[in-house]
Image (tube, helix red, strand yellow):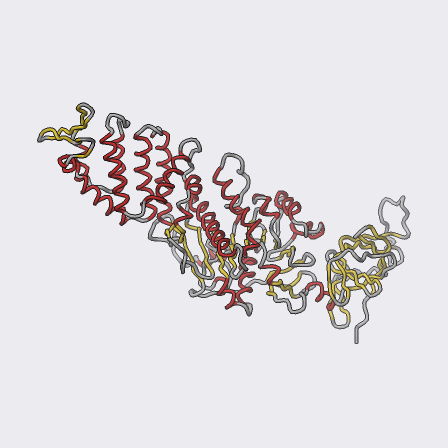
Length: 625
């Protein structure tokens, strides 16, 4: 038996999707008990039902007012004649969709008409509004604010999309991000998810590094705690050699100048990638450069030999092997170099070839062996550093490039290489380098690393996914989750001469525009949506919006979120902690929800209770006293 409906009023005016309702009574109860169900009264934001034959038009209350029947339009203010016969209540409704054939859908096929009766929206109708399609898999996120209805998010429509989570500090966005993926891993698909999907969390504040984060154990999860203070303190990120040793990446990393330094880097990296395979080859290459400098003493720059010696010292060659080059003086005799030694002069060249006597004094064979040995023992990053040192010598020896133009580049390179050595492990391939869930904590990383690692890792895993899927069916997915995304997606300095920022934004804009077709999905969380590139913001498909009060942030949401109606938008500044609006492709209407907070398994982002902290420390010595 179907319960009768609670009649509230009748449509007395229609203007597009906006309707005015003349209420039958002045009842202003926020909730009503109706046949055992506690239903929301006609208050702002509540759902009401407009009955039109067999169709139920669902609307929300957007405003309300009273019309006085006894005071005239000339009255300046209400007098004391308030009673039920004096004032009529009028509310304004905003149409959201319709229920037809026991299914809720957003459509403009039906519109309210004058005379349609308005009733309370029943629990059954709310289930259809907030509910899912028959058989649709979902995860629980919390309860709706006004109705107390359980809110479930459809897995396919939500997680196979780009997601934005926004809110001021302390609004609950970190808890929401964690809750979403925690519930996903709690679903019946957990084992299948871990087998064919990978998740990468860029964690700037170390909030997701606890042992039970996301409900996964150590077999399923890997935490990279990046620490640039010491090469021993933190863990290193596996990066494919082809991505790190890319001229574009290095040119931006080293802040290379376009006119002279970028061409130098491009040519050097090309030679390095195509020519140098092992230590023996490297030694042949660089000792060959030394021989060429000696042969061309009259044509090379005056400091070419000294520069080669400095490069050899960078590699680690001992002074003993360089003694013949350092202490003995070269001079030219009819264009042929001779070496003045304590034992007399040594003829270095004969018929444009190094003499046996010259090889002995220059220790050519020992230099080759030592350079080869040091190169073989070096890390991939150091190998590149050694090669670039000698390329500087080669480029400047024949004055094709003024060495003074590229010396500043090497000063920046030194700092960058030192940082990279602490945080990057160069790999030929990424097999078994990552687990299903990978958390990259940057809380102890310096600013240079914080801007490099997220972009480098993101580009690498996106290109790997794109390469695997392009032209094939999607059999695996990757999900990139960036907390505090404004740190790396800030568009403020774009086109202001910041090449690094331009390149980084281009990488992420390509990901968010093209990634979905390759099974690559981006989730970003930020307290400053106004700082994030508008291209990225406009390409998000689903949003969870916590409290925001800054006008620029609110304006950004208004301009980039087509599914957010004006009434929901106006409620954003007044949301409480943990309260959010869910809107986007996965939800038919914007939903106000109180995100459920886990008692124990949650991010390290709780507010500090100072009085509790101070009270607990009263019995202990002051650490800073």
